[in-house]
Image 1: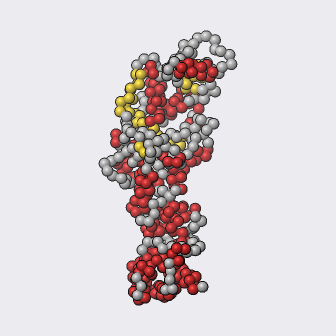
Image 2: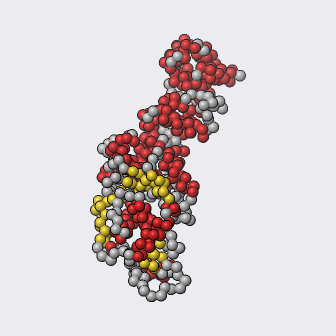
Amino acid sequence: MTVRTRFAPSPTGFLHIGGARTALFSYLYARKHGGQFVLRVEDTDRERSTPESVNAILEGMAWLNLEYDEGPFYQTERMARYQAVIQQLMASGHAYYCYASRESLDALREAQMARGEKPRYDNRYRDFTGTPPAGVPPVVRFRNPDDGEVVIDDGVRGRVVVQNSELDDLIIARSDGSPTYNLTVVVDDWDMGITHVIRGDDHLNNTPRQINLYRALGVTPPHFSHLPMIHAPDGTKLSKRHGAVSVMQYREEGYLPEALLNYLVRLGWSHGDQELFSREEMVALFDIKDINQSASSINPDKLRWLNQQYFKTQPAEHTALELRWHLGRLGIDPAVGGPDPARIVMAYADRAHTLVEMAEQAKPYYQDLTGYDAAALAKLDADAPGILSALAMALAAPEVWETEAALDHTVKQVAQTLEFKLGKVGPLLRLALLGQTASPSLGVTLALFGQAKTLARLHALRDTLIA
């Protein structure tokens, strides 16, 4: 049997972190078993589904590099197939028309709740043979079995047993003829040969109903695994304030897709004490049985830490692709002038947790300075212009630019010659170059600027001080 999994989002919003984790787990399971991963867009909710949401989902999947083998398939293009299955269920006696009005069902619900009963449809039209009431367009309901039970061998939760007597006859077609979720998802997974369904446990209540639909159609249901929810750090329901946002907002906030995937895979899944996983390791090590049954909580500090680990460990050229995007948002085109962004990544990997921070720190290498740190300027004394002149003279020699070590040594020699501590010379050099006194090592910083820009900025600060 070829393993086939799917990710089936509804395009009523962006691809959020919970959906991305579901997509990742489905992707990993398919790749682990040499199977296929299918993308399906469940867009039958025509009032809420939008093209913008579809694009947001596809954009998020592409940024995370969760490549699907088939799709995207759209439910709105499969309406004729759903109608055929509904008619099949009607013909076999597994479905029937229900003419109950919304008002009568609301009254039924209120009466049941008043008696302390679980609200449910009372099967009033299950065996109806009379004349249909005038002016009431019927829905189609599935005739759920009266007795027996549904056993779900859930990959995460284990054995789950639901009595059929607890289930009512669900609607599979609305009064306008459009199919409902529980019908379309069964038909789609059947037609697409889905063998394993991995989804959030908010769908667990639907699963026994869907299994009964499969049985009525004479189809073997797929294997189900229901993922626990993701909570906020305080254990409450996840909100936008806590991170329930589009995965593309994580890009805007400066996170690498690899770091976000690593973060997502550890939300409810573990492999010993390992924290960092390459994609190849995720595929090789992922196992549904290792998913925790309890809800997991997001940890923003953990994501920031992971992001920096990827700055340090993955090829700088790869990280630089994302850094270029962030530099572009600041109006910077590295191709016009300045260092290769990969060199910025190597220099600032220890000094930034997000690409937003890194891009901000990189601005002086590409843009003219707009001023100097006021507190640092206030600390300068009368020696500063002379130190700047001495640095400019020493750094005017071409041979000192051969290596970062040579540059670092040259600055130290200037300090020794002037009989100043490096702690006085180094911050002044950084102030001239960057407008503030924090940076990577002096040799690295000078190499990033290059000789011409370095000399120009040394002269500019000196002229400012003596003006």
